[in-house]
Image 1 (tube, rainbow, N blue to C red):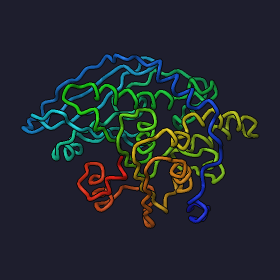
Image 2: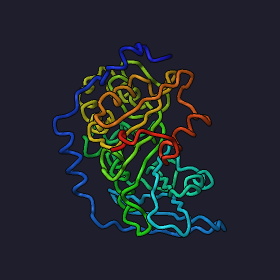
Image 3: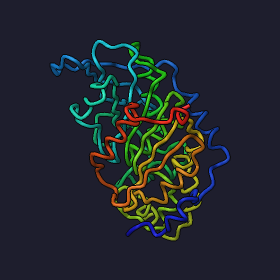
Image 4: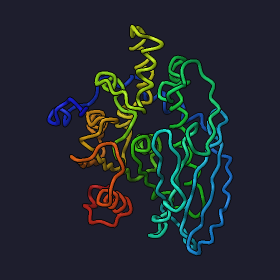
Length: 326
């Protein structure tokens, strides 16, 4: 089923729920509680590559979780700009070989595994309620402080801080990109950490939960929302409370915090992260922004023209109006 909202309406749509009055206070307080000195291990990986330095990064996240990331940097280079990338829901960071294109043009790349998914980051959270289908609803019954994605968002902030402090990294040139969950986390990275200078995302997840319920989207990533109500609250007595709690991790509510330029790619055939939910985030952005509509694309792998556009824009290898990047 395509998004039932007409495109003309999407262009001014900003979502079904207002941002909580204490949203910024909540996130600023959580950030202030993070350690200013991270304990981490940067372990060299020897792949016999003469032009690249590869590392496994591990650091302590909230709730004593261990967060893992793959890092690849050009060898014999200082003041390295870095691109952070985040994987899709229930996935893991790309293969090492998939990360080598950025160092080839002088950029480092860091790919973080989300805790509790398929990669090497650990998940230590103990919660009340259903965790059978996924992690959006995880902790929601106990309240916003127990939300699983609250900790993931803090991991995103922290991996940027750890890498920015490395002696060979140029902390003034840090960028992010990703799709689906990775797109959501890229937006979160820029919203929570002002070190991020440019954001490229495609079909971001975790936006406009009320709209998702209205449409009736039961595809795998959002199915847990519907399972919660079906099995735990079939009369929707807790809907307002649950949706208010989830509003603290709703990426459309992060939009006003983003200062870096954003380039968003949206497939109009997307039946998982419906276009209207993406517009809800995009229309709240107050930074320099551009949305690229892809009429033939759904929630799927991007192909060469789109991937080249993302790569070129992030690394500055296309002609751009520099006034848009101030």
